[in-house]
Image (cartoon, rainbow, N blue to C red; front, side, top):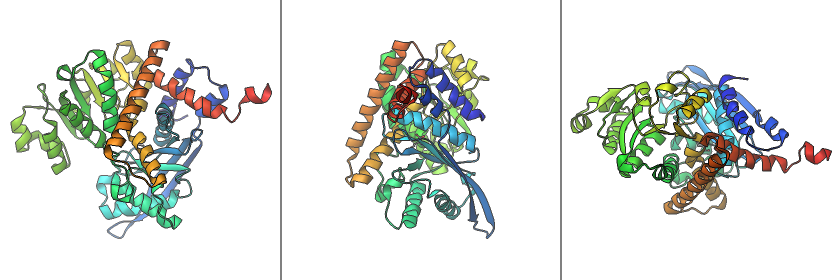
Length: 426
Ligand code: GLU
């Protein structure tokens, strides 16, 4: 079995020790249901032809049509997409969404393509996977380096192929094309609700809590700003090029403003405003992870905290806004050192939860106000945080194992409902 997926499966193995689920269910969950790999030829602006590799994996659909984002990134591979689809399966079960798990991606550096090329590539990807997706089969959404615009192209292309407007095939669309209010901020908002529920309980009040956020994309930048406005001291942020650190706290709205204007945090380093307003040090991504802060929020890519650096992590609490930022061996090391990890399949599930709301709105044709979206999101995130907390306490396991146990019980019910060895042989 490949490396990322086998690492993901280790979490499953660990959780299986604490549940009494049918053996058939465990066996099923070790394998992705369907994995598609496609080649997408794209006419480039200079007239040349380039062929890109694309993937879509439906991991498990026992609980409903599969759901998960599409990422555009140089490190996309079948192994990565399968692992991310595995995580989506558990994430949707944790939040009790009527979905299975899926993921997709194209191997490329999106920063090297023009907007025209990106559009042709996105439409080519949909042409290639059109028979594999659908509102009742598998529903893509945004992920790393894909956004509303890309989702709009995807839904448009699918609708052209089907010869009917099909908004429910993709979520995270522009509002004007059937997107939901609150979807863009949902991942960060969901994480914020988990933190608001957990941190006071752990004796951390906002003004006494320092936070470092790794990653300044859709999730990282918004969570940093939500925490800043709630009174937390956000002392460090970073993007793929590096980070900034100010022990007295950063003015996140200004940092966001400069990053948006210049497309990189590096511009903050010595661009007039923030540099003059707030003293700060320039740090690397590795240094950010090892800062002496109360809360660490990895919000970039997977495999950031590994056996190599886990013993240098000083944060008391880690909230995984990225998918898979901690490897399973690092998990054990952090647990031994008493660092509490709030797992990705709970913390970043706000995105897919509001995707579910978007899908429901598309199918009913009735659109909700922002307040309703956020209230429902808050309720779901809070209830599941409490459920996972209770399981962790009862079984005396980590929050990650508790989250897997919670998801496994729900997956078990769905898989068992169609019959198992016990049913047929007794
Ligand atoms: N890409 C997001 C995730 O990893 C959202 C998936 C979705 O909305 O379907 O959870």
